[in-house]
Length: 348
Image (tube, rainbow, N blue to C red; front, side):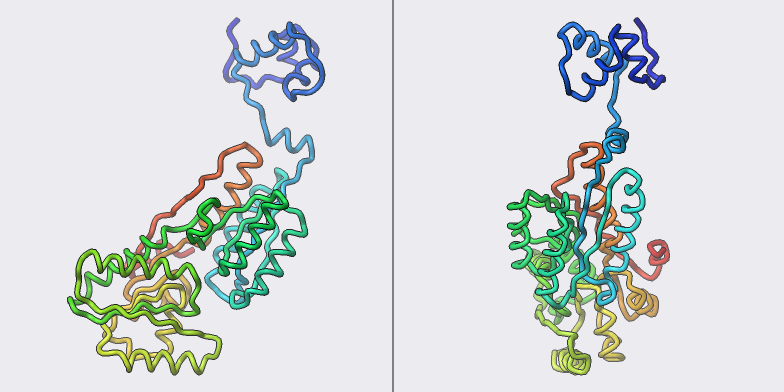
């Protein structure tokens, strides 16, 4: 018998074609209850011929199944970098909520490891199906992962990654390659034997990977530039400004500074006109950074796509619940270079 591939077959249709009752078809489809071998073979034959595809969403709705995703990330009110990430989470949560996927956000203080622990434990107490984290504190995150394994709770990461978590699903950028991109940009704009600075502002563990990539690029090219690494803390604004000025004044003719996070604007605000002849490469499309880019104070920004990272993080997990789609072990997003000429195409 020929079947229409365009028709949506109901349980009643399948029952009539198989010569069995609707209850028998239901038991076959859902793998419950007893079915005779003859009836099973008849139903399976029809299912194969009509190329039957189960609808997991409809099944979830029928069963009232709710999936809980807890997202743990730095407080966007304390670090504006995370504002787009929150938008990405909200967008994905809105799309999947009608299908029984609930997304809760837990914000921690990006300068306080204890805050991260408390918010993570709070999320775990809600017994989620999965945790999606942007972990700034690596040691503390490892302890949370251990708890997740004990409670059989899955874990996925976005934005922040180190080799310690190589067995976790990760969405973000290749941070070492990102540092190499920054080095390549600077290499094209400075002379050999230049003095270069890698600057970590409010240092986090993942910044070291960017530094490693940056230094590896120049090492492999055997360029004779001098590279120094410095760390500055913004906890006390007056101290940060003084230390920024001391850094620029105390170093011998700096040719370029690579700021390894989104806070290049803080450095520029602190050193003012002293940055005039220094090539600056930083990260992220914060309003302050974009303004400095357009004014010519920042030469390049590397776009880390925090909104896209967070949206995909939630989306992959939701589609795994609903459709059984595998979650990629790593999804490394493209490394986009932003200039004054193309910046407007990346702004919402």
